[in-house]
Amino acid sequence: MSTDLSFNVFNLFIVSASIHGLIFGLIVLFSKKFNAKPNRFLAFYVLLVSLNNIYFWFFDTNIVSYLNWKHFWLFPIQWDLLMFPAFYYFISTYLGNKELPKFYMYPFYISLPFCLIFLFQQIFFSELISQNFVTKFYIILSYVSIIFTAIAIYNGFRLIGNYQKQAVVSNQPKINVIWLKKLLSLAVVVFGIWVLITIFNTLIYRNDSIERVTTYVLWISMSLLIYWMGYLGVYHLGIFNQRADLRKVLIPTNIGTQNNEPKSKKRFEDINAIIKAEKLYLNPSLSLQALADRFELSEGYLSQLVNSNANSNFSDYVNALRIEDAKAILINPSYKNYTIISIALESGFNSKSTFYSAFKKHVGMSPIAFKKQHNIS
Image (cartoon, rainbow, N blue to C red; front, top):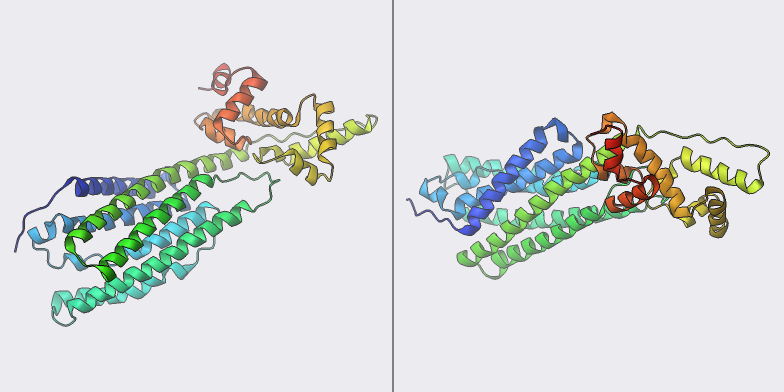
C-alpha cells in the first residue's frame, strides 16, 4: 500500500547535511592528503552518523511505504553501535595513543548475530519471530548504546586531562585540546538530548507525532556535531602534523663559552646553551618560574641573569629565540605552502596575533613581508 510522500524543511535540511557528511567522509577517508589514523576514525564516524540519518529519513518522508520496501527497516545492521567507538578512537589517536581498547566494540559484536537472524526470518519466515520481540530488542540496544556512549565521553575527558598533565617544560609540540573539550561538551549536549528523547519515547509517552518532532531535534543536533567534529578535526590535526614536520627542520644552535668570562655571564651562557639545544622555548607554556625550577634557581636570580646578559626581559628573550626558528622556516622553500598559524604554534607562540606582534617587534616587518623579501611566495 502506497502513501503520500512527506517532505518538510526539517527533513530536507537533515538529508542535505547528511549527503554533505557522506561526501566529506569519503574525501577524508580516501584522500592521501588526509592520510592519518585520527582522520580515518573521524571520517568513519561522520559516515556512520550521515548514513544513520539518511536511513531514518527514508521513513520520515514515507519513501519506504511509497515504494513498498517492506524489508528496508531491517536492511542496515546496527551500524550506529559503531559510532561511539569511532568517536572515542578519534580522540584517543588524535592525542597520540596507540592502544585502542576493544571493549567499545562489544555491543556491535553481540548485536550482529541477532540482527542477521531477524533479517533472515523477516525475509523467509515472517511469522517466526514476533514484531513485538524485535522492537523490544532494539529498545534494549538503544539503552546499551547510551551506556557505552556515556563511558566513551567520560573516558574522552579523562584522556584530555591526562594529556594536559604532561610536564610543562618540554620541547615536544603540544596538541591544542581546547577545541576538543568544546567538541566533547557539544557531544554531552547531544547525548543528553538523545537520552531524554529515548526515555520519553520508550518509557513515558509513546506518540508518533511527538516522536517525530523529538527525532528532528536529535537529527539536527547530530548534523551540527558532524560539521563541528569533521571540519575542526581535520583542521587542527593538519596544523599539528605540519608542526611535527617543521620540528624536524628546526636548526639547533650550539653556544660555546669562554673560561675567562665573569661567573654570571658564564652561568647565563650555560643556561642559554641548554635552552637552545633542547629548544625549551618552543613550549608556549614556558614561564620564568618553570625555567627557574628546571635549573634550580630562584625566579629573581634567573630574571636578573637574563636582563643583564640578554639585554632584554624574559619574554622578549624567549620570543627572540622563537623568531629565529620561525625565520628559518619561513625562508625554507620546502615549507612555502605551510600556514602561518602552523609556523607560529610550532615556533612556540600560542596564537597567530602574538606571533605577528613579536615578529614585527624583532624583525621590523610582518612574516608575510619577510617571506616576500626572500622571494618565498
